[in-house]
Image (cartoon, rainbow, N blue to C red; front, side, top):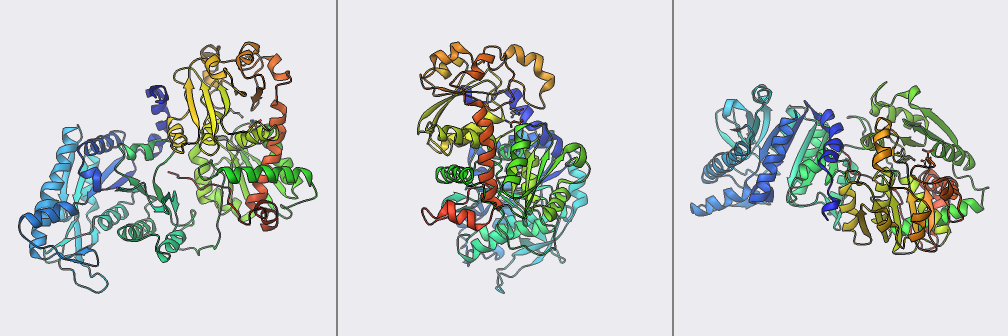
Length: 621
Ligand code: CP
Ligand code: NVA
């Protein structure tokens, strides 16, 4: 599996936009659970936070220590009493809190970070009057010295942070009379993140994030949280965690993430890779504080994370149906904004024509006119377009931008290519294979060339439909290791990363190619021409493929580079069908997203009586 690992350069380059974006911002991390007790996880956590600090992120750690307090109390022969799952903090328990939490746990974290090369400083509420608090009742019940935080000495934290230190805070607050309060670490982290106007607040837990029926909830809005609490799907310790997360968001924290602390380096994975992990908590689809909730379930197509085989086949059937019935106009009266940060022929025309054929009005916008994220904020752009249009299609550079648009827009957002993914292309390509009866389980697809956005979307497809995907690429040009890991975890497909294009092509039923130099990489073109010279679809490669092989290319093609002129036109080539099918599949996507229930109910769901949502909500940063 070593060849699936990303090279150091790839890792660094994927991290670059995040490093640039988060430098100088504040991250508050609630540290607890297994990440705080297991030696290997402790060390990986320490290294993660040191790395964050070294690249200019202002890191603050707030830690728990519940089990250490209980076990010390037991050793001392004190009985710990709980009311409704909440610890009653009597004088003996408070003494254990001071010893186990402020003493042992706090200093152990500080020691760990300092031994690994960081500069951590341990603090509790009484140090420099860091956390001022007062008594808190639990549903009207007095739990002893249990308190809440009323104010945070941010000046002290700023002083330490600006000197390069990582404050490590034990959640004990001090009252007006000098009395001490034991504060729930989740609440303390939220209060501290709010006071510091943190960019992000992380809760490290022992689960993947928020789960319902064993499935990860990638994005949790306030409405969704309320539904889950009402239905009992969200319960126990997650409820106060989620409530404190929303309080933090209302106080100006940009995003809250619940991530799995039992996974090594989960913090780095969440922060610095294109594919986030865990659950992100946002107020409500980017709605500004204080504005009324809108009763709407918005669906997007950003990636394939929640698309499944059934919904994929439903999209194919709907494409067939719309092709056969041009009189069906599910987008009548609707407008769709189509934004381009990069050039396009197929995507632009297929969306423009497709929207018009469905009865809608396309509004095509080049980046020179709207300057996404430059002329005004992404938030404002998304909100304004949502007032005029019923959906947003966008082709962007950074994948983060499409995820932000999806987060802030009040209308569905479709990814029309990002540096990471090209989902519309692969939906069209899968549909092309389907129309040729070639999309059968286990079909061998050989992708020859750069492990780019198109390769990554093939990998995502392998997560929802069983294929044998063999990607041949030069060293250092592999596709996303994270996406491979996620697709393989579904247990449907085989994915191989090979150096030898012949090994990939041998017996393949699909030979697939894309440009060696993608949009945005033009400066690397002369190097890439040399590096990729052997990764060409030509007669010799076709010769080792299956006798029924078809040749595919997403286009634009550079004849004579990644594919020979001859191979573009041989009978096995379905390349121009692929281009046409972008139109049909995207019409099905649009009809499903905004076409109204008649199209969906009549032609997607009526066969089995159930409507499957086909779009995704992604984990975003
Ligand atoms: N395949 C594809 O997306 O083509 P365009 O870049 O021309 O849109
Ligand atoms: N990988 C190519 C795909 C073009 C449709 C690019 O991003 O430029």
